[in-house]
Amino acid sequence: MNNLPEIVLVCSIAYLVGSIPTGVIVTKFAKGVDIRSYGSGSSGATNVARTLGPKLGGLVLILDILKGYISIYIISHIANDYWIIPFSGFLLVLGHCYPIYIKFRGGKGITTGFGTLIFLSPIAMALSLIGVSIAIITRYISLGSIIGTLLSLLSLLFFSIYEIFGSKYEDLLYCIPVGLIILLRHKSNFLRLIKGKEGKLENKASPKKKHN
Image (cartoon, rainbow, N blue to C red; front, side, top):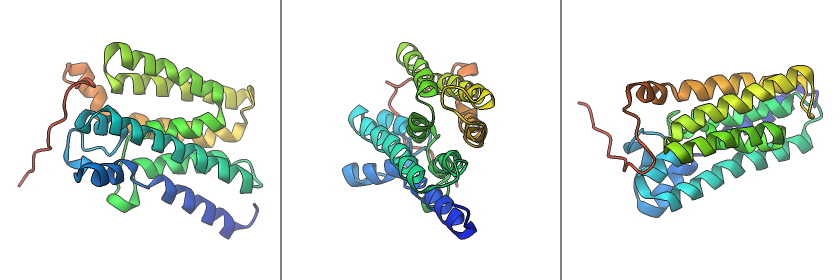
């Protein structure tokens, strides 16, 4: 894929698909509510689970993972240059976090990032599951997300630099910006964890206060 218009088209589609607000669509259809008006204001699976229960949260989680995996799988079959694959993975996560359809108020990148990582590096993805274990034990989803992200993307960074376990140097186009975005999106969670004010999974999310 050496044609610039084709590259721009694929990158644009990756961002636009990543921007599909699964959490907003599911909760609007199932319960008639705007999930962004509750809890953290995120449209991601965690906020959906805390607000409307684990079944809907699980559905959003699965759909967001599939959104990442299926998209990058298809892109891998139409891209002639390898670099476009990890870069498209980054754009999928970027779209999930800052979706153009809902005024750039999206999720925190974990689920769509997980889906893309399954394709790019199954080993790095497996390391991220340590974060899932931490979340289950502590009941702090954000803590597990932060640790899982650091473990998986730092390992992919190492794999990419040394081009081992099937990773290539171009994968840096994915792991560096995605790591920065996800950590940035979890900044408020990190601060609440330090202050001991972070909500656990079982804590019911409340409607966000409106400011005049």
